[in-house]
Amino acid sequence: MLVPMNGVSSMSDEQYIMAIDQGTTSSRAMLFNHVGQVVGKAQKEFTQHFPSPGWVEHDAEEIWNSVQSVMADALIQAHVAPYKVRGIGITNQRETTVMWNKKTGQPVHRAIVWQSKQTAAIADEWKAAGLTDMIRQKTGLVVDSYFSASKIKWLLDNVPGCREQAENGDLLFGTIDTWLLWKLTGGKVHATDYTNASRTMLFNINDLQWDQELLSAFDIPANILPEVRPSSEIYGYTANYTMSGVSVPICGIAGDQQAALVGQTAFDAGNVKNTYGTGAFIVMNIGDKPTLSNQGLLTTIAYGIGGKVTYALEGSIFVAGSAIQWLRDGMELVNDASESEALARAADEDDNVYVVPAFTGLGAPYWDQSLRGAVFGLTRGTTKAQFVRATLQAIAYQTKDVVDTMAADTGLPIDALHVDGGAARNDYLMQFQADILNATIRRAKISETTALGAAFLAGLAIGFWQDQDELRKLYESGDSFTPQITDERRHKLYHGWQVAIKAAQAFEQD
Ligand SMILES: Nc1ncnc2c1ncn2[C@@H]1O[C@H](COP(=O)(O)OP(=O)(O)O)[C@@H](O)[C@H]1O
Ligand SMILES: O=P(O)(O)OC[C@H](O)CO
Image (tube, rainbow, N blue to C red; front, top):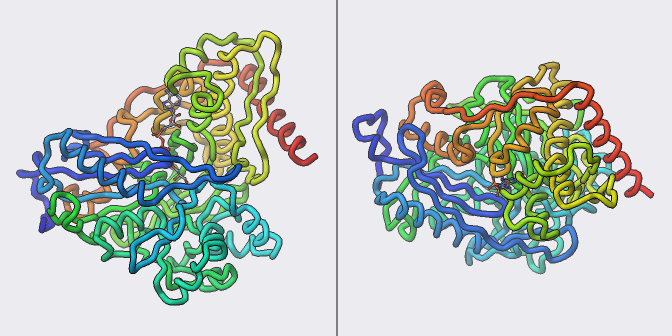
């Protein structure tokens, strides 16, 4: 067994923290050294299942297999022996719901993914039953099928034998972190952390407990729920079928957007980050009080470290990088996401195309589950360059919708945004984001701040790193983008977007 040691700096240059980043489209494992550099990295995509329009599911076993394979590959790539890994941090796509039988270890159904709309009717029923305000006060969330609660209810009610297994005490629920922790520890630990629990719509963010009143309103049994723990502590040790039999502590867990906040070392109230992945998630550290938003933002748990819980405001955008995947796989306009940048630059400046990529409804600040996508402003002269540019711009417009709301809500002007994630590599998008927000965009030097955040949480728990001040010193910023357009042009462009949203809503309502 690897025994956690405090402050072993003489040995630390040859010891590592492994981060598992289980995202919506791929699983990654990364090895970080003591100065926070990536020394090994592996990534594996897995299957997206779309069983009906608007439904998105993942095979939890395939996810587990992909995680095992990237853990092994990252070690091989870095030529690092498993015994040199001091600890493992898990970060994950949030809300995605897995249920499995505790005796067989088999999932009872495919995991229902955060983006999936198959449970929208359940969320609508809860709204109609007048639960919105109670849910908001207790969980900080808006009522939406995005969160785990309606997914759990759907599985209990639609999978034959599921409720019976729960009644017999044989059923376990978990978000992806919980599923991976359970698998990594050989079925010994059924736990989650505050950040993931806060995305279920079952967890009271004020008293930090599963909420009995909500559980009975939703008819969800408490015995399927994991134990909720801080984001940085030892949860358990790897079973002998992973890490070549070396027992390594799993000692950090956070949902991926919260982990990115930690990876950006956004430890002070008022710090804001945006991660441009499959979706885009703007998260502001709001300190130690769970202040509620008046304008459609979520209040959520940022992290729990050292006996202290920090809260965040979040604006969730469901479609960001996945719109570029749609350009690649659905529209076949690009062969690779990175081609979108050159095409956007080649498009005519004066063209006025707007793409509203509301493929799975719109998240913050609109929270419209039923809205679908729309395109406006096509002319005979429109080419794929304009179409691609408009899709990239839509990511920036949605971010502006959220950032403006956040600034109005908190009364804090947001003049700088820390960014990371796959689509943040696109310089055209980052410049347009700076232009349309009229703010400075500061891109982290490594785009993998989500994994870095998970590593930081794991490292803090075992004394690999001492405190948040030490982590701040490790953070390296990369390129910055500053606004380059006139106020008049900014207002004109954004006005067009607001009109496009209204027109898309009118089409849906009719
Ligand atoms: N150069 C690029 N321009 C625009 N989008 C990109 C670019 N590179 C990657 N993406 C998008 O970023 C997303 C992948 O980012 P990542 O942070 O790995 O996401 P996730 O963690 O959600 O799986 C994909 O949706 C992809 O389309
Ligand atoms: O997989 P990502 O990085 O798009 O993140 C998904 C979010 O956690 C969903 O809430």
